[in-house]
Length: 286
Image (cartoon, rainbow, N blue to C red):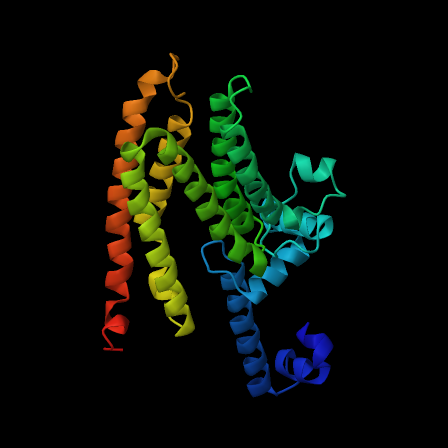
């Protein structure tokens, strides 16, 4: 590439001297040796990736499956990110589907599941409605994990999806908590009030910090994810338990209530972490 861009300079550097031009000859050989050393270092598997090594690998057909996968992913859907993996079976079988929109579509499905959950909850004539509600909520909980996983794996982002995803999560959980509080009374209403109060407070804190350009200081941490897992699992189990009727799921009532109170406890501790991180700003020290 160098000799194509600057042929004269290249010929001067690498030209072996004629006759008694030993100085130029030694300079050319030394320069060639230095360039060769750099090429060997760049192509070494232990060295870090660089434009030179990447170019050499692409020219020689190296790079392994990942390089080929990136090329194939770019061919299959140009709207996926540059780090997206090679297309799988579904993407090959359904090339017409806009796969870069799948995370957003999963979020939309979670929003649609909310009115379905309410309708099924108050229609006692439907057989096995508790099981259906539980499966519906479990499916919505899975999409909550899946849309984020796919967005990271396919290296795609959506401003609207980033806004709607946490809103859909909170609406889904809040709806289930309100429905179950009306059925089971204080046993569910007390932890529900704690969870909802924390969600409102932390959401307001994040919005307030975002207005000051400090949203990253209150990012979701491990405790927040643990709280979400506890809450969704306890609600999925509690939705299985029918009211006022003998069922094989009756034994799940007490474990689900205990798990819901644990979720409320983790909710308080995780919320305190966010407010502690934002304390310097709240107290006017920053």
